[in-house]
Length: 236
Image (cartoon, rainbow, N blue to C red; front, side, top):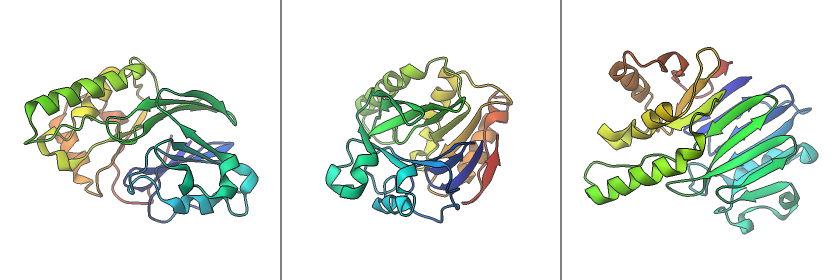
């Protein structure tokens, strides 16, 4: 499997038979292999996760391009000619679709997170499911956010994955890794198999080095992917 970082929370996972594009909103896209199925995921309607330009990706490959969207993305934003190849999913959905097993988790913001099994791989994309605690917010807000986040993430307890795309947002200041750290404590990652891709960094990749510096003995360090620029590719 090859992973290409597109930008922000946008990634392309290339497998032997399919391509999975997550939360694209801007930047150049790698050339897609025309013989492979292309699945385009959008976790919610925020403009840094969903760009209607994605529907142009089906041009010239209409029978092999599919769209999997959170149902908070309104149907009228989907071109009529793409509706037959589009799923709109609520939280806690379980569905088999064109060779993919898809489960959605409720987000602590808008929309859903995606857990996908296909071609022997398990891939998780968090969207905006994160522990969005903020300095300066009332303690009651932050405590509820913590509880809501942990409840939403519970379906992943003990789960093994091949690739996980997780927010690491520097805007949260001292709270920047709360959700990231809890995800690592909850799931079962494996050296040599699991790769963890920080995202939602707003192109401030120093936050990845900050996490590494603050977690010198963390056993997941070798699973963490140090992203440095758009367009980077990673083999796994």
